[in-house]
Length: 119
Image (tube, rainbow, N blue to C red):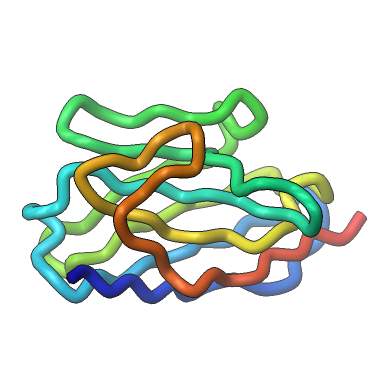
């Protein structure tokens, strides 16, 4: 069982930056894949950034603005979000496991953290 806890959400103006973090209950080096999803009311969770041993991948809407990374010494996953736009608003979930897919499938989930970008 892997427990995930997100931190760092909040309210920011358009063009601003936020950094989300996700603490894991196990050594992050033992986790095959991790990612960040965004969900808005009435819609499915959307994978926006993914990281595994082969590298990082991003959703089209965040390429060049968001960066996913992980710190093995702190067992923490990060999402650096720059040049934020109002459409980035949503609840951001950390996910982890053997699979973290573009279809919203993951083995473990955090509780989510709200990000609101004002125009």
